[in-house]
Amino acid sequence: MWQRWPHAAALVMASLTLLVHRQRRGVLLMLAALAVLLSGAAGVFHAGVEYGLWESPLACTAVTIGTSGDFLADLAAAPVVRCDAAAWTLFGISLAGYNAIFSILIGGLSLWWLKRRA
Image 1 (cartoon, rainbow, N blue to C red):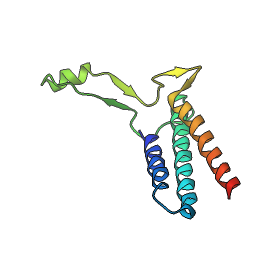
Image 2 (cartoon, rainbow, N blue to C red; image 1 turned 90 degrees about the vertical axis):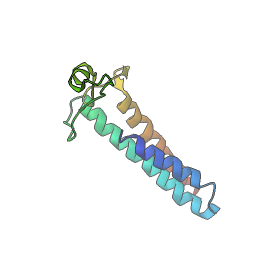
Image 3 (cartoon, helix red, strand yellow; image 1 turned 135 degrees about the horizontal axis):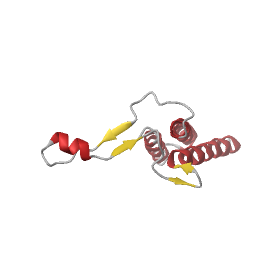
Image 4 (cartoon, rainbow, N blue to C red; image 1 turned 30 degrees about the vertical axis):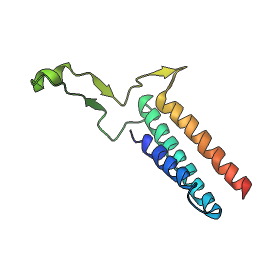
């Protein structure tokens, strides 16, 4: 979940560039690029937890409780969603890994492009 918040912040900052004067757009775009890089850093951390490189300081399980009215039965039947195991991979890379790769690439290229334009 933590990987999504910086993307939302980047979207808001990039959208605000449509409303501000041209001279101030660079600052907002730079902050948006940094937010995307922050999401990449969160992706690196989460991928490291999934691949067993380090442990997460957070509790790594969550359950969804059903609506049958029997709390204990719903709890026992609920699927366990773990953050220390990849739910899906492609070519051995998890979604957190892909987020890390693409966010760092996009954020880095954005900062390079902004510097080149300045």
